[in-house]
Structures are given as structure tokens and as C-alpha cells.
Length: 359
Ligand SMILES: *Cc1c(COP(=O)(O)O)cnc(C)c1O
Picture 1 (tube, rainbow, N blue to C red):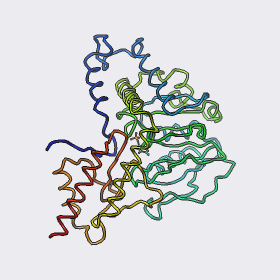
Picture 2 (picture 1 turned 180 degrees about the vertical axis):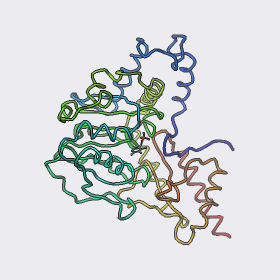
Picture 3 (picture 1 turned 180 degrees about the horizontal axis):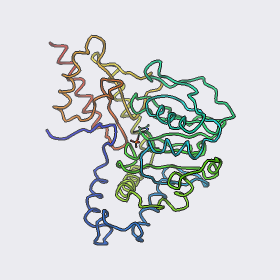
Picture 4 (picture 1 turned 90 degrees about the vertical axis):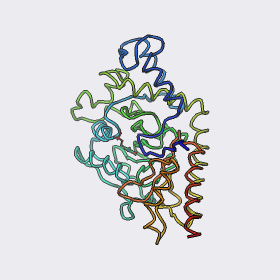
């Protein structure tokens, strides 16, 4: 028994083929005799990889003309600032659905008038607010489509009367997206699109250039678009692995095919959580994420949490400890996580229930 089932929230599991190709490129990048870690980003071979990566993003998400894809250092957290810098002139509203959404809002508030249009902190962010009305005088409305910590998700592309900006760090590439509904989509790669060290932004070009503030060169999306993400040294290795991840997504049949698998994996887990007397889910049923499945011990069983954690560990299950603000457990079932991994966790939950039935 040594197979590990990795449910880490991020960085997370990557497909084996991606890891194998990364190892081989570390030794020799595209037959150049040079490691991808040493290759100059100004070579033809590297530019081909950048171009392939951009093209794959466009293909996999059917990104319409008028949009560009850029790759940046600094993670999604840096993009919280980029968003406000590049889009906030007079007023922006945010949907406050969790820690990440709140951090994004805070960055904008440091630069101008930004507020939470609706917020679900009253119930520890266990649901997505509904019934709010988006004013038409905003520079943009910002949403976090998947709330990684709480396991809630906005699973449809909402209608929005103002430019819509979405942090899709943890559900990008998990489903088809109607990119034309967004002025921008961004995120860190390390949940579904690759390793840590690179963030992506899919930007509608004509949504830029509307702010009057001074934009530092590195914080101006237009610079990164113009320079094809090579204004300065890009995170070469992270982009290489992201490109391999996108190739894998394509080989799996694309985001629609992966979505079907993801829905099934999530359903397997939620069905077990709802059936199993030892556990209960924490997210509102209608808002349950297909990427991060959060659950806790059911009432009266809280004292058994460590025991279940140990049983999971003994079964090769890694990374299911819930975020400290929610407690309990969180299984992150991103694209690279398989039905087999999910089944292993479900088996473990059943074994735990049986053990305590007979005791
Ligand atoms: C992980 C995560 C972030 C933070 O990403 P960094 O790249 O670490 O800055 C932001 N938003 C969401 C939704 C996330 O899941």
C-alpha cells in the first residue's frame, strides 16, 4: 500500500504526464541540450513554448478575438492590486464570498472607492449571496467564482451590466466559460492550470486604458500585452509546466470533458457526505463547489476528527485538513484528481463509519 491520494488545495496534484515531461525538460529542453531552467527566454525554442501556451489558453476556453492572455509573477494576490490599478477610476463593487474575495476588495480600497455589494460572512461564507442588484455606474464588478476555503462556487457566467472581473484561481479550466461575459478573468496557476510561480490574466483589450492614475510599468497590463508577457524575465519553468498542463487538458478532451468528470467526482463525495452518519457538509447545497469539497464531523462526533485524519493518512490520503477558518476537512478535487482518488477517500469514510457502528 503506497499509492498516495493527494487532495491538497494548492499547490496541488498535477497529472503524471506533466511531471514526466517537466523532469525530461529539466534535463534537456526540446533537444537543445540545455535545461529548461537554463534556457534563455529570448530563444526561438522558448518563444515557441510561450506562443503554444497562449494559443492553448485561447483554444481551450474559446477566448474570443479582442482578448489577450498574459502570464505574470506575483500570484493571484498581486493581481488583486493589478485589477484595481488598471480598472478602478471612480467606483467598483465586489462580491464578498470569502477570504480571497475580501483580500481582493481590500487592495481596491487602498486605491479608491470600492465596496462589498453583498457578503456572506454572516454564515462564515458558507453560501453565495443572491438577489443583489448590480448598479450600472460601476467601473467593474468583481467576483470570486470558486471560494477555495469554503467550498462554494458560482457555477454559471452571470449577467452583468458593467465590466465583470473574475478571480477564477481555483476553478479555471474545470468547466467551459463564456469569456465574452467578462472584461477579465485571472488567477494563480497552482490550482488547476499548473504549478505555483505564475498567474494568468485573460483580458479584454478595450476594457483597459480607462484610468487616469499613473500606472507603474510592471503593474500596467498593457505593457505585458504589448511585450507578450516578456517585458522582463518570465517565470520560465512555471510557464513550461503550465503549458504541459494545458496540453494534458486538451488530451483529456478539453474543459467540457473534464467538467463531466469533475461533476461526477464531486457528486461521489457529496453523496457520501450526505449519506454517511459521521460527516456533514458545510457549504449550502445549491452552492457546493465541484473543486473543493468541505465537510466536518457531524454533531456529537467532533471528538473523532483526529482519528479520521489518522485513518485517512494510513490509507495514503494527503491534504484533507480543512482551512483553519472552517475546520474539519477539505478535499480539493481539481482536474488532475481522479475518480480513483475520490473513491479511495469515500472507502475510507465508509470504513470509519463501520468501525464506529460496531464499536
Ligand atoms: C489560492 C487563491 C488565491 C491566492 O493565490 P496566490 O497565487 O497564492 O496569490 C486567490 N484567489 C483564490 C480564489 C485562490 O484559490
